Length: 102
Image (cartoon, rainbow, N blue to C red; front, side, top):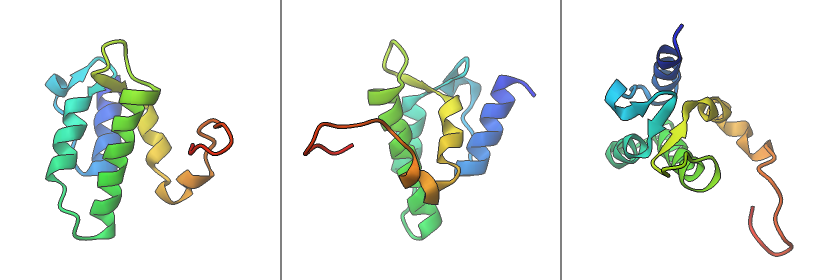
């Protein structure tokens, strides 16, 4: 399976839709794809709410935590971290100073 095919499969699994090749740069998904997806999700049940939150988390990954040098894309390898959405609270995302949110 090529990197793009794996990216496609992961996005289909988590969002029910996959980016086109033009929405990607190699193994990176453009943040505009996640913004567009987030904007079109109708929050009518838990599944769609989870998809919306996953999009928002990927945007945070790309903008704040793991973005590329251009700040316009995020590597798809972080998508599997969002598979177990219920267990995400148990992940260690770093540490913060006393009195700050992490």
